[in-house]
Length: 144
Image (tube, rainbow, N blue to C red; front, side, top):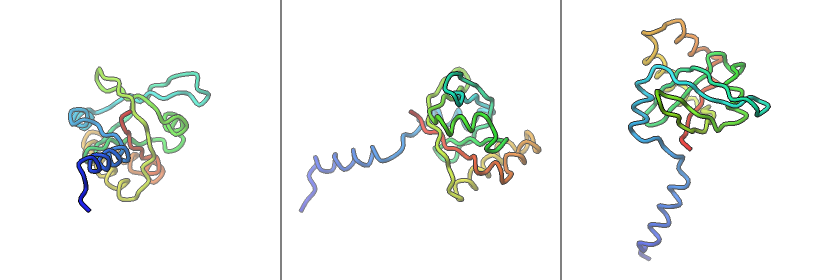
């Protein structure tokens, strides 16, 4: 039985809903180029916004961050509790959702991206971002 145009559109719509939202190419390029961003999180009691300067990398068209302080980092703990956060990059405020990225291949690729982007700028800070206690804090940022 042949698939009708309507059925094809419905299947595409279902696939589109199943796929996570993606950043546009200009945003990915900006985040790949920019040295630091501010991530705005909300205090654990939900009353106070906090901004923290962090590093950001891209792997393909996906955006990742990691806590240099591991799971003890305030912004990381807050983002885990309330994953809807805001990234401030240059003059843009970008609403995103932070999601843990635990797959070993992704964590390795993000580590490679941190080393490539920041290794020459600050070898000691880059080494800190590649320590085992930081790897588990790798988070993907998805646009909202």
